[in-house]
Image (cartoon, rainbow, N blue to C red):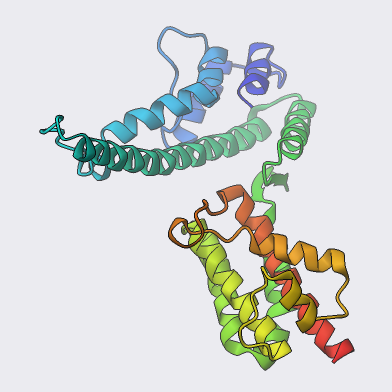
Length: 295
């Protein structure tokens, strides 16, 4: 994105009357999120604003000044006590990592807001309409190739999340009405997972709660009160007519569950949780339909 926008302004693809005026407007339109970089050309200022290294450096700077990180810093008063020293280092590293991710996400959100402002101003000031169309096309293609779950739609072009409408369609429109009839508590659990995703809650917790709901649905449908979906044999006995490859997929889905205390592995990353929630909902639908057709 940084490189593509640099080309746009370096070569004045939109045939702007004044690039300086455009970027001055961009500063106000973006609520001063964007500012020109001292000592750089206008095109370079745009590049460096969106460049990954700039975002990383700003996230590091914000993290180092973050009170939430400061309070977790170790005193390191007794360096001779190796165990205490290592524990303090681990606590500090974990706190830094968590706060860094928060600030990095905030900075990404700021960049997306500025990109949205660029769309609006190009529509207003650009005398070459093909420039905006070309930019949108390249962003959509790049997002698709990079598995970034964003799309650009409408006029003016608007950034929209690719996965939330799909997730809402799968969860709210198809699954929940049927699930609420038989298992209202499980429907509420999955709906809560959906809301937690939109709020940006911990993905490990989101997946764990959603999978527990799925597992309980499987137990209620099969009557196997101790069923674990990670157990291939138990799953086959509970749902004998489900194809073997599908059962294998279900057990592999179960393997993603992993709080460090209980399972010794890290939970799903942010970009994975969307796919996993869709998978959980699809399995729940499959089990409901299995019961209806196979008894």
